Image (cartoon, rainbow, N blue to C red; front, top):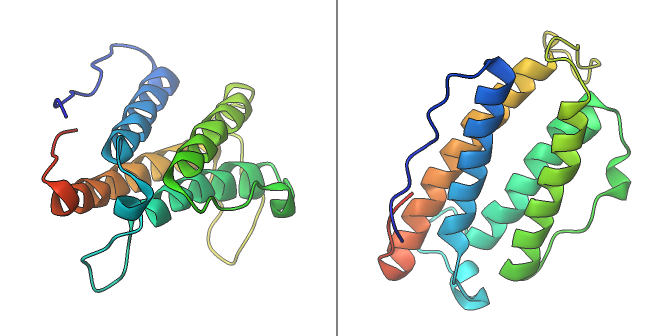
Length: 154
């Protein structure tokens, strides 16, 4: 897979954060491109982490932070975890659209309702957390893919 570079922008904070988040989302999905279900569920790691699990986890992370914690939406309305890589990829992409619509309609300084005993956060913090979480797991997916078939690249 060809190595892709993140976008370089001179835009504002929102535009920059969202562009880098989208780059990391797409980078993550590139790691799962052309992987069959056997490869997506294979793991050579002691933890058992797989590309399929990571893909479902990435959709869950965005849904939990933005849809449940930030907006208070009911988690029971979430689409179920996909048992195959194609549907998991589609579930993750569908999550982007829903999350992006929420983010577009909100100010970055909007506080997230309290959800645990930790200090309160705002939408800015949530987006930056998702950016680091997505980049971290894209790196995990990169290693899993390289172990699977030798494919590398962002």
